[in-house]
Amino acid sequence: MSSQRSRVVVVGAGPSGLLLSHLLAAQGVDSVVVEARSQAYVAARVRAGILEHSTVEVLREAGLDARLRAEGAEHRGIHLHWPGERHHLDFVDLVGRSVWAYGQTEVQKDLVAAAQARGQEVHYEAADVALHDLETDHPHVTFTDAAGVARRVDADVVVGCDGAFGPSRAAVPDAVRTTWERTYPFAWLGIMADVAPSTEELIYAWHPDGFAMHSLRSPSVSRFYLQVPAGTDVATWSDDRIWDALAERLGHGHDGWVLTPGPITDRSVLPMRSFVQTPMRHGRLFLVGDAAHTVPPTGAKGLNLAVADVGLLAPALVALLTRGDARAADTYSERALRRVWRCTHFSWWMTSMLHTGEDPFDRQLQLSQLRWVTGSTAGAAGLAENYAGLPLEL
Image 1 (tube, rainbow, N blue to C red):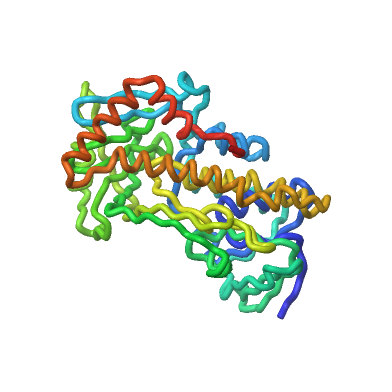
Image 2: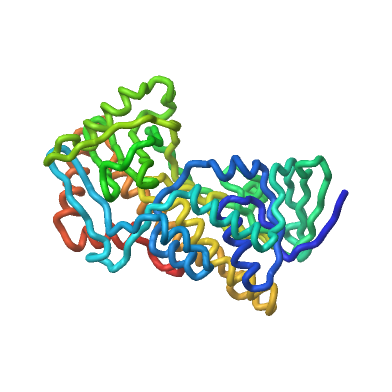
C-alpha cells in the first residue's frame, strides 16, 4: 500500500470539496481530495443554478468570481405566478441583496481550473474509500486509485463532502447520530433546453395541475421544472407534453408573455426530500453539504448551504491546524446547524406554498399565502431575506 500524509483529507471533489481545498491552500494548509466518480462525471452533474449573495461573497473573497461576473447574470428578484396573476419581488429593493444565475457546472469548472493551477492533488475514480480512526488524533483514509494502486493518506482531519450516499455520512456511528427526514409525495421533472430564456428572471408558478419553474443557465440555455408524482418515469413525458404543460402552468399568453420552446437536451426526475443528520462533526471527521443535509430545491438552497458550511469550516480548520485553536472547530456543528435548519425551514415553506395536492382546502391556503407574500412588504421581505442569502453565521 502506498502511504502519504496530508493535514486534511477531503472526501468528495464536487464544489464544496474543491472550494474547501482552495480556501485551505490559501492559508497554507495542504489537503488531498479523494473522489469516487470520474472528473468528467462530476463536471457534468446538472444541479443548482442560482447563487445567493452569501455564496457570491465567498467566491469573491476566494478570488474565484471573475468568470461569474463576466458570464453570469445578476438577478434582482423572482416572479411569482398563479393563474391570472404575476408579481415581481425585487430583492434589492426589499433587502439590498441580489442573486446570480450561474450553474453549478460553471462553478465546478472554475474550481477545477483553480485546483489545477495550484497543483492540487485530486484522486478521481477512487474505489473502496474508507475512513478510519476518526475518534483519534490520527485519522486516515484508504482507497484504491484509478490505476489500481491501494493508497493510505494519514491526516489530522477528514472532511466529508461526498454527498448523501458517500462513506462519510455512514462513518458517524448509529449511537451518535440523529436524523430527521421528510419525503414529499411529488418530484420534479427537470429539463435543459437549447433555447434562449423567455424571462429575464426566474418564474415560480403555482397551478392546479402542479408547480412549474422557468430557470436560466445562459443566454442560450434554459432550465425548466414540472411537478410530477414521485416515481414518475421520464419516458412517459414526450417533448410536446412537456412544453404544453410548461405553457399552461407558467402562464403562456398572460399579459402577452410567450413561452418559447426549443430542443430538449437533458431530462431527469428529481425526488424531493428534506434530511438533516446531526452532529456535523464526529471526532476528527467534519461533514459538509449533502453529507449532512438535503433540502428540496424549491428554495435554491442546496449548493448555497454547502458553500456556507465551507465558509464556516475553512477558518475553523485553519485555526485548529495552524494555531492549535480548537474553539471554532469545536462549535462548527452547532453553528452550521443553525443555518441548516433555517434553510431547511425556508425550503419546506417554499415547497409547501407552491406544490399542489388533492386537498382543495390546502389550495386555498396556498393562494392566500401567495397573495400575502406578493401584497405585503413584510411578507415579500421575509421571502427575499431568506432567498437572497442569510449571513454565514446566524
